[in-house]
Image: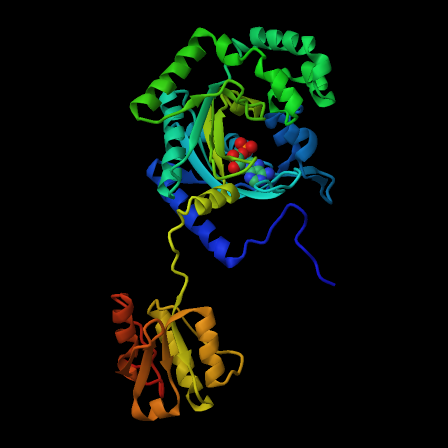
Length: 437
Ligand code: AMP
């Protein structure tokens, strides 16, 4: 019986996994430069964590959560996103006592029961940051700048940044009333889900994927036109900071981003190299979320980048640097007599930081070389009884086929030198290794 990975999930095989590691490494490097520290939260939470934060009437909560009862009868949910767990942890660990803002980053898989398609999966990876404790518009601009700079650092050039402001408690009620009236007037043109949204949570009307609903919502009143004085000033400041840093953006008044917790700034970056699922990252401010989890009033802002979509965009833009995935040295062992020495040599090479391997399948010398060729090694070293006797081994450059003879006891140093690994001084001590220093 053979099994496939569950629908909406994929196995990330070495070639792609290596690219992801590179993308993650670059992200961590840059997040750290901007003052963010790592946090790791559980992959599942009490279901209530997401109900409270993402919102009962959102698509995520209504349709997409992997919720289950554990053997203790608790309702748990595989995290559909990273912000709510981080804020839950912030409150749980009294991080409001720490110097503010608390700046955290995370990477890891998220789970949403969505209809799978290119760029949309049921398990997908995100890399995200949260800056908790400050309402300063400079930190909104910083988060946006960080995301853009990260994308640039991995070679993306063609990006579009959308921004919006979702207002706050002061300006929402007036706006929501207007939005409701508008939706009510257009009720028959909306899908059944949207008709329910009119009463439940009219802001969610903007999330609908139905074309007919999107057409109606195009002409709906937009919150950005109803911001109160404070929210307007905040948004203008964010724009000003972006302008002075030379960051181009488009204001997109319908950008409400599918989650209830957003206040003030929201933003999203799309790539022209992706199809319908073209958002590679997005985020926003959530000034009520800490309170939702029982903490003191504390503003916050964050974003998340989708690793799959990012990886596809970087690939399509031709921006992946050629990642050197060749092993350094293959130790070919023509006859059994030299195997034990070869195994010791392998250890010495590895201790010196030289990636190396030998045959474990009982192949003939010809078979070993074929394998080495397929797998991709920079050098092959031949170590048989003849070499043991003479104390000289042949090192072959697999690219140029050039060969050179090296005394066995100098081999590790010589290879370190050729491969540019200075400081490699590891030695294998013991009888018969021939590689003592
Ligand atoms: P969100 O948490 O919805 O704000 O999403 C942030 C980013 O995660 C998006 O811009 C996407 O790049 C990525 N993303 C969200 N949902 C999925 C999904 N189902 N499959 C793949 N990537 C996703």
